[in-house]
Length: 451
Ligand SMILES: Cc1cc2nc3c(=O)[nH]c(=O)nc-3n(C[C@H](O)[C@H](O)[C@H](O)COP(=O)(O)OP(=O)(O)OC[C@H]3O[C@@H](n4cnc5c(N)ncnc54)[C@H](O)[C@@H]3O)c2cc1C
Image (cartoon, rainbow, N blue to C red; front, side):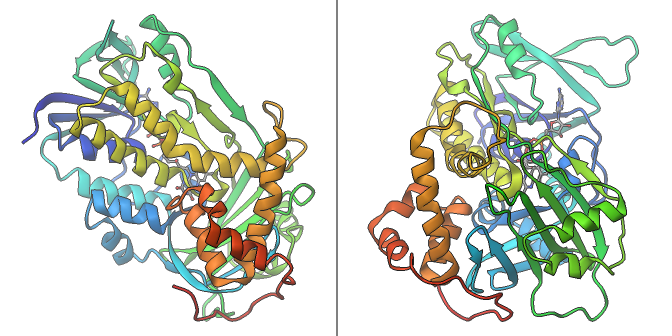
């Protein structure tokens, strides 16, 4: 039986939805406040502009979400979300060459609107959850502890500010969160922030998968080859017989959005296979772009006077270069930490430390890779980053040619294991054994190997 009275979650994207789910186990009433409206159908919405670009869910994150909201995975599959064998169903050109097509793990792909819709559908069935849309939270109330939020209705010309009391407020408003200012209004210091910006831009477009198309792969992933090769291209199937094509470029090499420029950019990837696939395919949408992709961490864990009654989660705490598809998994891991905070009667300051830890692996992976580009903006590169990157190059090579090396690497990318697991004796030995293996040719056939 829930013990505490009322919790407010600000922001109704995945970090907010998953937080609301765990709070329902601990509070009599949970209120979700969202600035936007929620569509009834699985379509994108303006409050989540990144939702028009490629989104995937690693196996680890998928298990966590389905554990929190049983049935979501079945709903996604029932709606036709492709469940891909990784890397068996892929042609995957890594920075260290082609990856052999072992059957190692799985990856779920979907339009982002579908995932959010499936999560909302399960969550909103809970009668103790009040959902209010068109509500913009403008600040916190309280002093020593946070006691609620200030908000106004969107579209209210008089801009009347109202208050809503709560025993716990969770900020899940994403990269653009105003929580730092809200905290200073309560007399807390501005948090230190770290930004490592690879100047990465995305441009995405949907295509119809040509009828009868069967080249022996289901998805293409052509990664950049830093420091000079800056372009990445992903062509992934989605529900409804569509491909999403997301092209991205680091170091300011942004993909254009006009038809001809987009195709030319795709032709400039490290292998022409993606260009060959889309050049005659029927586009279903215009090209849309997105450039808010910097790694951005707010060091809330370092604020000693962090107030009781307030927690920040998801991209609002730590957002990553999205190319590794880890933000949703980090949100799910953090939601479980929120649950633990409440079960074990820990402080919200404790939670912020755990939230930092939840994002630490993804941060290390994305910022380490981004440091390979000379154009990346941020604090100076530390010497050990170069050493780690040299080791990662060997690990990528092992993952490309050895089934167990591949499993080691994919567990780390899925955030099921910490990046430090690549330094454990078994992984280290595989990496050293495989370091001299020659790169493989483009692997047209999947392999039946591994786990
Ligand atoms: C291009 C791109 C591709 C990505 N691909 C992947 C991927 O493949 N896999 C993956 O795991 N992750 C991916 N991510 C990351 C993923 O999108 C986020 O980590 C995920 O959406 C969780 O974010 P969030 O809920 O913290 O914030 P957001 O998704 O940004 O949502 C914030 C919510 O808060 C609301 N809001 C904002 N301000 C207020 C306010 N004042 N009052 C009320 N409501 C407010 C917004 O309307 C919105 O609904 C990608 C990100 C980008 C940019």
